[in-house]
Length: 221
Image 1 (cartoon, rainbow, N blue to C red):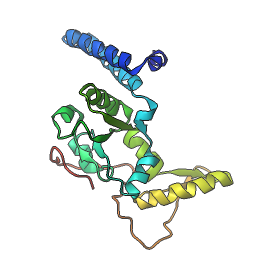
Image 2 (image 1 turned 90 degrees about the vertical axis):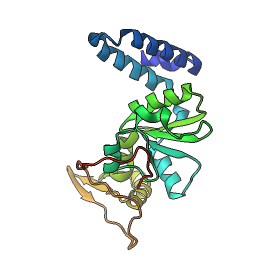
Image 3 (image 1 turned 180 degrees about the vertical axis):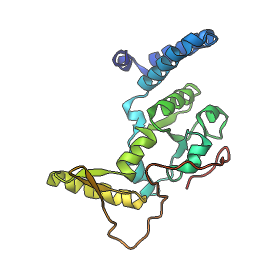
Image 4 (image 1 turned 135 degrees about the vertical axis):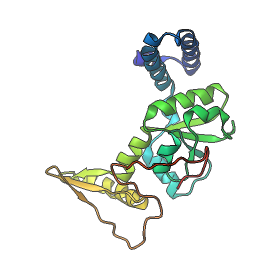
């Protein structure tokens, strides 16, 4: 089903999803239908987002390092999750509050959740409300952790892979990450080669639970 949806033009996808949401409204009173409907809506939302509307984690990291400020980074997770860790410069706008936020229709908006599901749904909501420049972080916070905070290189990697990992390592250390070399199933942390302390927040895996809430919308670390 997803492959067929990807071949449709964006207007058709939006029209179909709008119809699906209307159908959901009619059936939502029946508990036995909710799980199937929820899965179909998520699949449709994911299929609607095109590749050029997805920004990968390394591109976002590059924007942050260069202090590119022509976009607003939006964390769609709960306020509690936002308080535990968030990508630098992001603002907290839980997905259920997305249309009640201060986001402007002429803003460049980059959305992220833990994965692509919530951000794809929020992308559809905003695009359907005439927000012009809306993007999602490909892979969400999970990709940010895997590719930026905790990147890994196998000890048997080729010279080309090792050279590429050197850049990733420096980016990871900039954000307080922990790049690792994997050998025989054992991970060895790569030490920083600088005396300058990272300026960005550090997340240790797995993240611990922290109580307390945050304001409805606030700046990230």
